[in-house]
Length: 174
Image 1 (cartoon, helix red, strand yellow):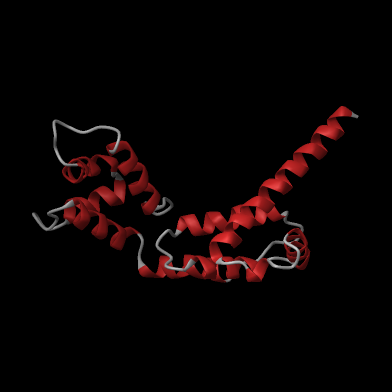
Image 2 (cartoon, helix red, strand yellow; image 1 turned 90 degrees about the vertical axis):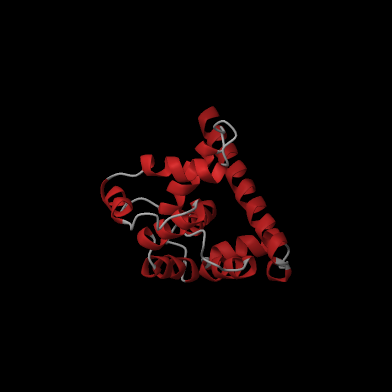
């Protein structure tokens, strides 16, 4: 569990559970009964060391699992990676965005509002990335609301990827 993402583990487990229902049993009961089978090593030892009957619901197990395997200091480190994000030298716009989204997805409980996520990304972009973004939206990026800004960032990424694909195809044709 040390190198795995507990949130991802639970998300994938819940996806599997959502694919079937056992004889009318509630989904939460099914999750509570099946989750122990997904654990190994330290996580299995932890679960077996819990006081008997201390976990009465999937919500209890979910919360205790994350408290144990996603401690506050880890959350704080990941939140810092998001808030202090910056582009790497010679990094392409879409690579920078993918890296940023990966940081956000690693800590789904970050608690940042969308406008703040947009602001952190914008502040961390290189000068050339900001120029590209501002040129593509006619200097109006920071005046967009958070949803418009996220949509526009996705648009810029798609446009850059399409442009790069066209360049690769032209090179291959030569």
